[in-house]
Length: 281
Image (cartoon, rainbow, N blue to C red; front, side, top):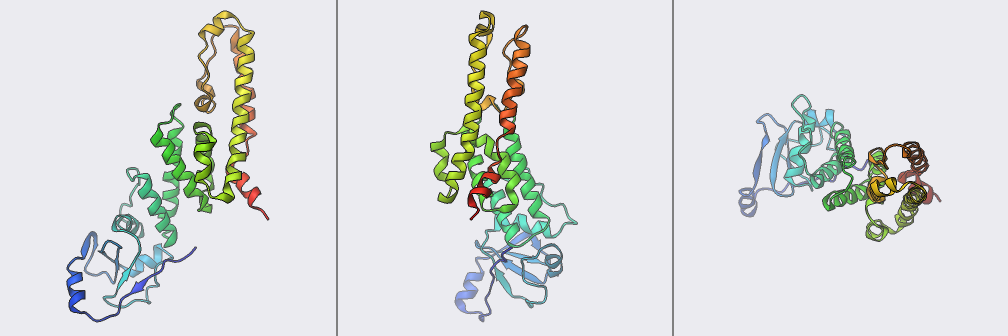
């Protein structure tokens, strides 16, 4: 993985530097007097850490013997990100559970964790993003905010090969809840054909489910036609277990319909698989 870029300012103090230092803030969590390396965030917050912890729990920071004394290393990330990230290099303390971290901040933290190879943070960020996606499967009708989150997550996973499982968990929700025209151009040009082909698989499954249901309802009793609710395939196709035609004679037909639709869904290739195939030379 690419290592972070660092800048150590060796210039002697000047009147301008001394004035600028007055604007610096010290992290309340990372201010131990025995710390032997200091990082400065892009918004001018200082983090005093121990080189041994960085060497043991991260692989993208300078080696323990590459900096000396009171040098300050500038990092590109904001203090909000570093405040979370550095907690993972002290695993004997309570590391953040990330449950209350907003998605946009979680993505920034994940990028920083991969950039600086913070071993404990990488899988926890991935796991948290996965469970954010899973939480949206509990809703039969996604809110616009949830759809926006799914777009962010799918776009993020395209650039992070270790997030394929998250990608494949989010892609079905986005495919069935948003029309192609509202999602296609969020992808880079080289991935647009992959998304179009992937989403078409879900469109085929939706048309099959709708056609099979219409055929059944047309030949069924008036009781079934009147008691059946209209099938909203954009949401219901992922919740077949919650859908019911009626009781009585329709039970076995309904069971057969669900089995047929489930088989169509099981045959859908994962989005990551479609991407990998189309990107092959």
